Amino acid sequence: MITMINTLGCTDHNTFKNDETLNEIFTPNEIHDISTLIDYTDDIVKSKTNQKDINHAYHVYFDILKDSMLANNYIIPISNKMKFNFLKSIDKNTIKEFWHIHHSKNINNEELILNRNGKFLNYIKEIGKSDSIFNDFYHFTIDMGDIYKAGLIIYFSNNDKINFNLAQNRILAMVCIFSISEEIKGQIIESITIPSNH
Image (cartoon, rainbow, N blue to C red; front, side, top):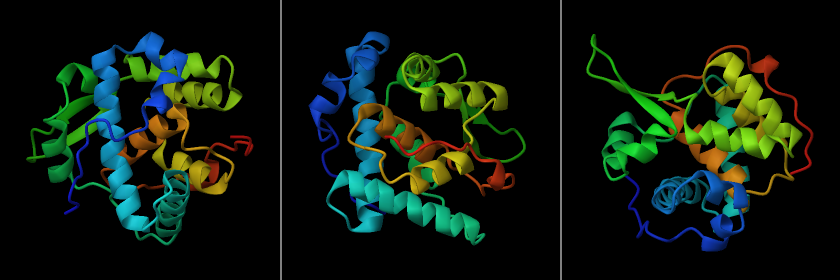
């Protein structure tokens, strides 16, 4: 189990302060929770890659996820037990802006389902007004009904110019990592084709 460092305020505050769209859509408390979620995934990514530079660490990590996925050796970044234990520390209202928590009646299991009416997708939509990549991602997600995790993994891995120091890319990466809860199957070839200009 990863030993978590102090997750309050570890993310560079300028990462969020400079994102006007983020501050317009989310409340200060929600942004604090988002920072905590990102700190959690940051720790996982740095631990699994042994990279100190966070931008490079995310690139290496998504390369690992892609290679394992294409080799049918699927990696689950966070076990359900760890994931939902951690999410207990996050305000339920913040979680609802990203996901619904689905409780299976047949088996003792929980799953994160994207909330298509939450602030996260609204944030992606607003970013997409000036960024064609996020615009495509928004409409693709609306059409699919959920995050296309395989496509995101390939996108992040194949585009070396993506800057994970930007809030919008770091948040999207966090949502992708938290959303992986089972084997990623099928339609890998149909992943979103996105130019490497980030």
